[in-house]
Image 1 (cartoon, one colour):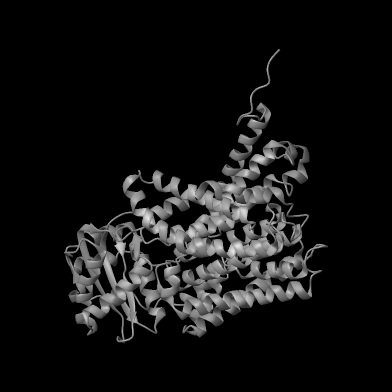
Image 2: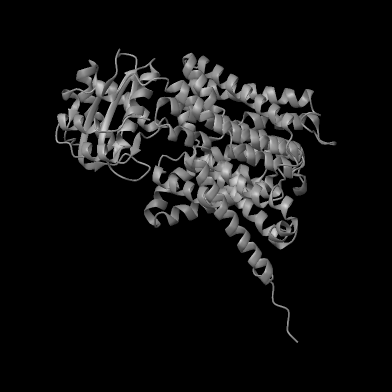
Length: 574
């Protein structure tokens, strides 16, 4: 007689193990494939990843071959539990990545422009969404027994949160991420998302999410606020002190990855225990980690790549698996949600940007940039669905809204910002503004050296130029990758743009995303009220140095004439 096996990790039978491994393999593979196809056509990868789940789930495979779909993706049992466990971990890591994009110090340095844009970008769409759900609950499918105020507050919150990862990718694709325009959008979206997730955590508390731990709604809300304050102050300060020690004492990148992910799971567990949800704790951990001045762009990118390339495809494919998008698609509901989301966000953020001092066209571009949704709304909608706050039809409408706004933002920003390319880098270059051999080996000294060179052309004090350029450099690094950096500043005391160039044979550490040293440094100065000029010059630099031939020739140019000839070989923008 054979004794029963002791309890352990491998209590699945052989069929369940094979099914689980097959599910993970086919979901990850198809999601990555369709995500790459979407990216090739300049669409968000999340669209392709969700499509993978739609094809393998009840929408397509389940409609055509229901027995096959149920056999591969069972509706109950250990395989389903394991898959749901993977999605919980994936959602926590995705919110970690979203949190690392938030720099609280950048928000404060941007001043009233970021605050106005963010606050109006929350208030206006929240009011639109709340009002629509409050006065038309039947249209949005409020379930019987769901509190009217909580339901309306959720919809308002869902329509007011932006999606930092999507915004970052959109700006990066258009070579705008390092511009002042890009920094303003990033800072505004950071504050916007922080406020939005704080409101949503309160919504979860109002739904009684903490009652299973024996806490009242009031206690859950109080503990959530205290937890957020603790994470954004004490923990944020502590990690900033610990990170240099971790980088010195552990092997890169394994030591940092293990530490950050361990910290994320602990923060997520604490948040879940408080009754909000695990993803909120992971989001706060991301902010605490990402705001450290010791976290290099290369390390942040390593964390992002790990989560984005492994866990994100699984998570979004699983969303497609769990919902029948065909059966739950309501054209009227989806259209109304999309229109309200766009109107509230674009109006609110554009108004805020204009009150913050931006001109009409640029303010409108900020509104469309902030209108990008994606990961954040889908996760938020999924949580509301799990808690029974919304139905399947509204969830599908929110997913369509998130994907639609992400697809819309890029082309409209391109039109508003790059209306015409009237100014080129070559128009601004002078022999006296080219330094063939920088003495500096660190970026602060290199910027000071070029500020002295620019002072002669601009007719300004070199210290004034350096302070403005260095303050901007600390706000967000200006390395473009590939050995190029463009520190820049907008100044009140100049009437025309000034560009000076320095070459470094040994290379300078500019905290580039690719980890490569910088060999060509542009210092760009533009008039304070003329954002369009800065965008045009930065775009032209990105165009020139995206061409390998032009970049290589410029890197080895011994003098000004050779440098000018090198950049002239770059092809025109299509």
